[in-house]
Length: 221
Image (cartoon, rainbow, N blue to C red; front, side, top):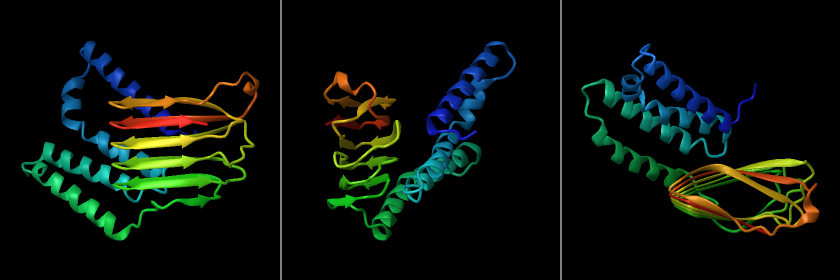
């Protein structure tokens, strides 16, 4: 079974719920286990990033894994590693700036899978994919302006994942499609400004899966 990122989030939530249920039944001390192993959340996020976002896995995936490992070692050893966490993150971001030239200039993209990653920068992309199959947009302390109005969509439904961490995404979609938005807002959100048209009942659907953490997304046509 090919599990999506949303499916994995659901599985994790179910596991947490089962853990608390078993604790209520006096079978395990789930709260104690959770207090010892909570840094695994960062490692799991990093692994999922690598698994589902090949374009940005080089940067975000290892970063989450490094943070998780440091926090886990801090929990289980006498090493005072927590004080080293922020300096290591700053060094990591510095290496990203040295070795990765972000595509923040406006450019035309004709690939069938949209991929946009912005780290402390901006991206402005006008897609002319024919057809567009889906994609992923990620902003971390940055922004992205994505224009899909020149694309064609042949499938009944395509999925675009939007991840915004302390950033913002502006997405313009074609007039002949419907938009469905779902996701997880954490001190953030999204705004769907697409105009409703009753004649689009059987039109292709762009399914937007949003994760906004102190960030936001605006969708329009």
